Amino acid sequence: MVKAMNTHLFTKLLDQVSHLTDQQNQLLGDALNEHDPVARIIKKIEQRLVDNPECPHCHSNFINRHGKTGGMQRYKCKNCLKTFNSTTKTPSAWLHYKDRWFDYYKCMLESKVLRESVAICRINLKTSFRWRHKFLQLPAMLKAYKLEGIIEAD
Image 1: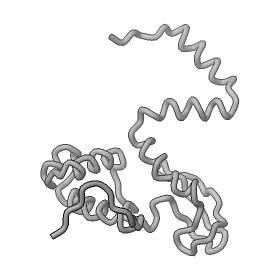
Image 2 (image 1 turned 30 degrees about the vertical axis):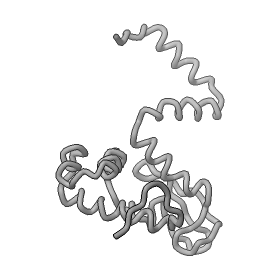
Image 3 (image 1 turned 90 degrees about the horizontal axis):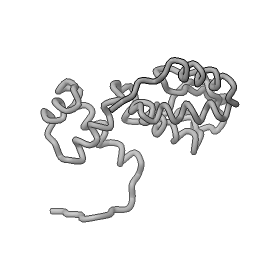
């Protein structure tokens, strides 16, 4: 059962939020965004450039943040002057419906056929086909060298 919040308490909470430090505001925003699947996916994707800042065009480490688009951080390389985000030159570049990616990954892991994935993820059959091929390119791009678990070969 969900209780309705008292208007007075909510107003008091909003007043307290305005007195938070920048770090506390960031922590509060992170806590609120944890329930948003798109925000979680974007955060995981962007972590790659946070851990290893590198221009995908010239591989320079001299990059600056350059605004946001579509909820994702953009960057500009000081060396080649090109802009990019964390999906540039990856199989997931130019793919839409980020909120459905996680469900589609689950469908692939469960070996569901394209039409089942279409029904679960509410996407077009052509989109499902393209995503399947794009997502299967990711392990090759990540250069996974170690095999684990049960492996079969003919």
